[in-house]
Image (cartoon, rainbow, N blue to C red; front, side, top):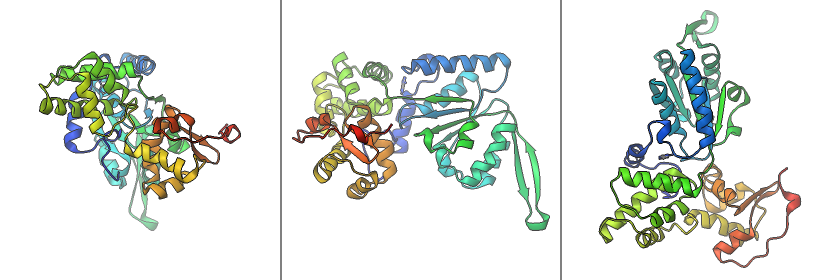
Length: 343
Ligand code: ADE
C-alpha cells in the first residue's frame, strides 16, 4: 500500500498487528456480529467433530479488516487443531508449499490469505491436494522426468480473498463452504469497541463508543484502530477516560470525518466531481489521476463508498451520488443515469 491510512482495513505495522491480535476473539461465542455466518459455521464444525473428520475447505470473501483471519483462528481453536498461516503472494515455489502440505496432520488447518494471488503453477499444484489429499511432485527433467505421488493427511484449507470473483473457477469449485463477510452495522461495532475497551482496561462512555462505531466504516479492524488513537488522546489530553467530546476531537484531528471517510476517500470523490463532472469515469483513469494502485482503490476505498451509496458502478464507469456531493458540500446536479447501471 502506498501510504498509511488510519481507516484502512489493511493492517499496518507488526506492532499494530500485535495490538489487533490481543483483541481478537478466540472462540465463536466471543465473536460479535455476522450471526448468520456464525450459525452456519457452527453446524459445519459440529458435524465435522461428530464424524471425527476434518472440516470441508472453506472460502471467506469480503473487504479487508472484517474478520477473515480471525475466523480462521477461531475455527482452529473450536476444532482443537493446529493452524499454519501463509498467503498467496508469499507462496512462490512449489517446494515451499510441498513442505507445508507434507507437514500438515489430520484435521490441521492451512490458512491462505489473499488466495486470489496464488501463481498459476501453485494453484495447479494445490488442486489434487484439496481434492484427493495428495500432491504430484515432478522429479528430474526431460526424458527422466517422473511424477511422484505423495499422500497427504486430511487437512482443511481456509482461503481468504477480498473478492470471490478474483478466484479462478476451478479453485473456487474446490471449496465446500463459502462465507461472505459483510460490513458490520454500527450497533455491533459499538459492542466490539466496548469489549475492546474492557480488555484494554480503559473506561469509555456509551456515547463515545457510538461515535467511534459511526466512524469505523463498518470494519472491526478500523474500530479497534480508532479506539487506540482515541485512548492515546484521552491519556495525553485528559484523565484517560474516553467521553464523547474526547472521541470527537481525537477523530477529527485524525482527519476521519463523521461518516468515517478519510482524506483518500474524499479526494477520490472530489476528483470524480471536479475532473469528471460526477462521472461516469473508468477506474483506470481515477487510478492515474490519484496516483494510486487500482487494487487499493477497488479493495480499500470503493467498497464502503458503494455500501453507503456515495458511489455507483455503472457500465461506463464510476459515478458519485447526490448524497456524496452533499456530504462534501459541493453543488452539482447528478444526472439520472439509470440506463447506465449494471444489470
Ligand atoms: N474484534 C475484531 N472483530 C471482532 C468481532 N467480530 N467480535 C469481537 N471482537 C472483535
